[in-house]
Image (cartoon, rainbow, N blue to C red; front, side, top):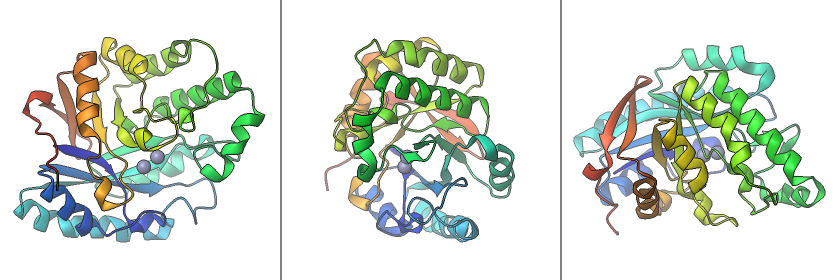
Length: 272
Ligand SMILES: [Zn+2]
Ligand SMILES: [Zn+2]
């Protein structure tokens, strides 16, 4: 099994060192994991991201554990989860170009000054027009895809996290993003962390995933683990969804180049 969305204590709000996640992954039979700690350029980062002057330390730390992990049968990939920001595209590109990332996840966690995935500010969902909120979110998602900064869009319908949805057909919001993914050859991530949140759904929704499959958009798999025990959590459900939709392969990355792995070759995580 493969998990490409793992945080560490370096981002300031996850628990555990890289080696703790690797031990957990190996005990569950994982063959490959990717670390993807937060890098955010456009806001005060103290709560959400590693400090920018620590990115080099993060990269070094992940590079350090690569050989020990591969000797134990689990390949480690160097990734990052980077927030899209309208005014910071070139700055982000320069920063990402400095390090040998295997892949970069792109995310939209905020709109304007609102970190809409932070539970402390979830009350704001009751104060906004949900249809406009979804329109703004998916517009920001499309822009981040078109920036070509990223390889994969993480948790692509994160705006549903707290279960607030407009009473319209959500497929109309997905179409532009799916077209942008197709045109720019990006992947989307099937991310199981939504099952642990109020919405209790995988990101993305089945309808969104069906549209991606029809458009030939490839997928990666991620748990968004913020503690070691969350590595590979609910991947049985993610694989069932992928198979149901018709996906036969997932994507692996090395030095930002894709390769494909048959889903039939993946083994479900072992119980510990
Ligand atoms: Zn995220
Ligand atoms: Zn994450």
